[in-house]
Every structure is written in C-alpha cells, then in structure tokens.
Image (cartoon, rainbow, N blue to C red; front, top):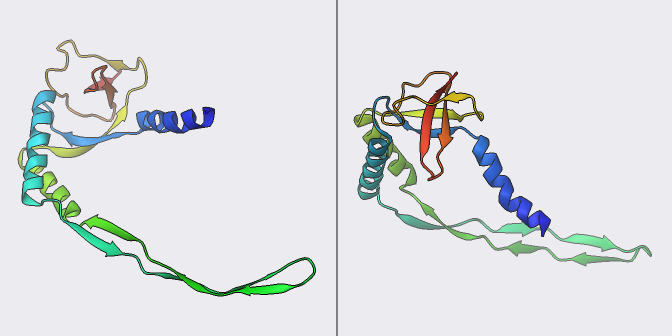
Length: 155
C-alpha cells in the first residue's frame, strides 16, 4: 500500500520542481494570456483537427531455443512470430502545435521557460497580479491555491 502511494505522489512532487514552459508577453494580464491561449488552441484544433491513423508495428521473430536441465537433457522450443501491435497516431498533432505557436506569435507572445520560486525567495509586486512582469534571469512562478500561476521576480 505504501509503495502505491509513493508512485502516486512522486510525479506530483517531481513536477513541482520542473520549469514551466508557456507563452509569455510582459504587460498583459494573466486572464488575457489564458484567453489568448484558449483562442489559439481552438483555432489550431479547427485548422488542424485530430486525424487518427491506425498503424501496426511489425511482427517480431522469436528464434528457436534449446533448454537443457541439470541432467543435460535438452529440448528445443520452436521459433514463433509475436504479432505486431495495433495503435493509433494523430497525424495532425505536430501541425496543430505549429498552428498554435504561430497564432500566439501573431498575438505578440513568445515561448518562455520559467523556474519555480523557492519558498520565500520572491517579492510580490504591490500591484498584485494585474500584469505579467518583464522576464529576467531571476523570474520564477508560484502556483496559487486556485491553480492559477503567478510570475514574480526574485530578490
């Protein structure tokens, strides 16, 4: 039971330490950022809809093998084919990502990678989170209790 709990909690702990990759434009409100992301996601899905293609991996030949016991009596297991796996691939996924990136670029956003803040190492601007600050090498993000993100500049 304890091992199962560790496997459930570990990804959450590790993801809290990873940098945030998002679109960013200094001076816009977080609400505007989210609205622009949503509209570009919708546009990308409309222009490059999900198109699933069924594919099959090739079968694998497992060669015959000889198994011997301690009395040196050997038997040979015949070779056989292991069938391929059937799976689906969204062939428009990469195109959809490019359409979304182009849409965000047209709105003035650029991809950014922001590190998580260390506890107590960030200063909260007096104006609150009305506008996204200019990114510096000391910028970091905090996750609010409602799940939204806040970008701050350290020290």
